[in-house]
Amino acid sequence: MSVIKIPYLKGFIDLEIPDMNLKGILESRAHHFHANDDEVTIVRKALENPIESSRLSELAKGKKNIVIITSDHTRPVPSKITLPILLEEIRCGSPDAEITILIATGFHRSTTYEEMTKKFGEEIVNNENLINHVCGNDSSLVKVGILPSGGELWLNRLAIGADLLVSEGFIEPHFFAGFSGGRKSVLPGVAGKTTVLANHCSKFIHDDNSRTGILEGNPIHKDMLFAAEAANLAFILNVVIDADKKIINAFAGHPVKAHADGCDFVTELASVNAVYSDIVITSNGGYPLDQNIYQSVKGMTAAEASAKEDAVIIIAAACNDGHGGEAFYQTFLENKTAHDIMDKIMGIPMESTIPDQWESQILARILIKHKVILVTDECDPKLVTDMHMLHAYTLDEALKMAYEMKGKDASITVIPDGVAVIVKK
Image 1 (cartoon, rainbow, N blue to C red):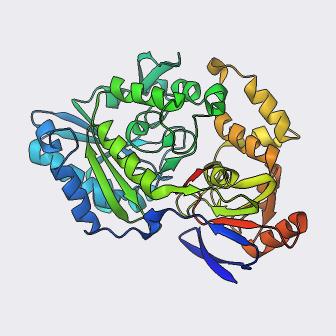
Image 2 (image 1 turned 45 degrees about the vertical axis):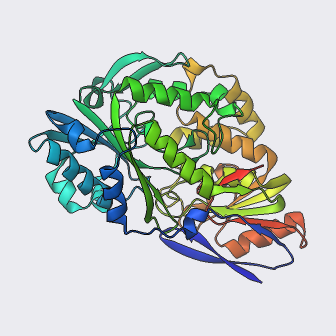
């Protein structure tokens, strides 16, 4: 019997799998990577040795209005460590600069004061100027051009009006943008609703290059690069983290080159070969990524990439914040089957993309091919079943349900952290 720890909320739950059933455990090597330095030293060294860029302190000289784009409450960027160091570096070059920390909510709700305090620490929240980006607030947006896709590019006027625009974030595999981090801080991070909808249209989500770990030929990535350049994003600090959300590497400097180096590092650690099975068990990496069903679709895509035809996918995700998107929820509530949802979405043109359509499209794609069992004791089971999935309170209960569907001899692949791997087919 093998015992595997599965991330859930802020801890882990044990999963027991008979050795005769277990065909593979797919894990990112980042979770076992041992850095030579402590987290603060890693970040400082990255800023002291920027990739194809002058130091941030040099770029800041003479700048009066500086904006730092940071991630919101749904992202495990260790800002309590990174932001103070970034601020110190900027003020070393421009002590009197007016600095705004712009929270890149993208299409998410605003980050609350309590969430800010938890993420950034009381000192920053009480002493710095933090502002939530609101994608639907037209008065806060400026049109700056047309995306390569043809969609209008609207960005937060604070970002556009900055003398120096900087962003911080983290790099991990992303289920349709290829990787998080870098240019993604701008689009969707501080983009307008119209722009996000165009970039996340059904045609792009359906594209075979809009997948985990793929940047080359990815139409979503192409739009994002254009947006970052149009915003004059000048410098990034992106970190890579392990299963405990600890920094194991950092990349700073040129927005494209530093991000590319970081993606190469993550690819080397996160790539795993698919082990196809009748049952695939995964998670969404625990808190904060497993707060809602919307985010948990990401982990399901890793399981999808290692699932046999008609396999059962089990995902452990607390979803204590509910569905995570009203339009996302209503799409499943109002349609009888995943096929119905997919047919409707594929008929929607770019300019008519609706909120959360991309998440609905990907979940429908998975549900057309597989049964999904969502394991949570923090979310209303009806919410889960309304969205065409099965519910279980525990992994043992879910596994029993899966055995009933696939047989006691069913093969099993476990992907402990579904958002941390790039599954190569």
